[in-house]
Length: 115
Length: 112
Image (tube, rainbow over all chains, first blue to last red; front, side):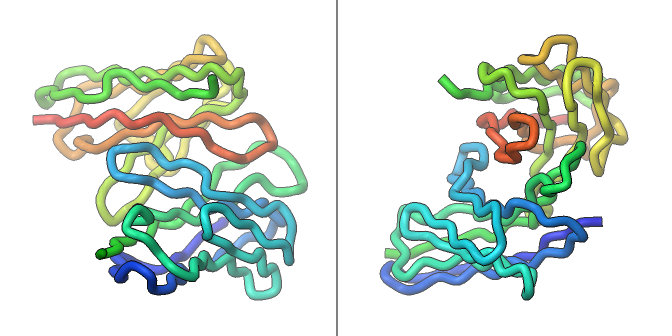
């Protein structure tokens, strides 16, 4: 079945430093890829999604490129802020072939940013 | 307004009691989900509903059942709750084929 493996947290950084959260996936399909963010006390919410291979998604200074050859979708940000402290989830969306599917999430990466 | 609403937000029950967690969405989404979230385990899918009365087991369905009689409403039921079902439960919905999940704010269940 499908699977997602991402950087094990917690990741602890100082404000202004760069962030990379690795995400690797296994699937026989060609799904849309997602990054979700979950702030304390809230449910996860979409950070951004990328439906096609070799395309880049971005939002709030975060970005990731859909690398089909490497089956990776690493999340990056050049300069983190304390307000970026949250849990980040990489996820596989529905395959382009259609049909019912079950979303596949990574286990989440907790990011703690110190001032 | 695009919203998933969960009730109750906090619940304390004794072992063996029945639990009902309710979820509503105002987006007419076909698909709805129940997840539980535990430290270090991320989001675990309990049940998925593709539409009214079209429910499918997720990865950890044991000890849970669901009901969906209206498209906008999806319930999670624990018959005779156990202490290991203490967790935060999230409901989510998605438009068919779109893939983006919209999550509620969670229901924190404590079983004593």
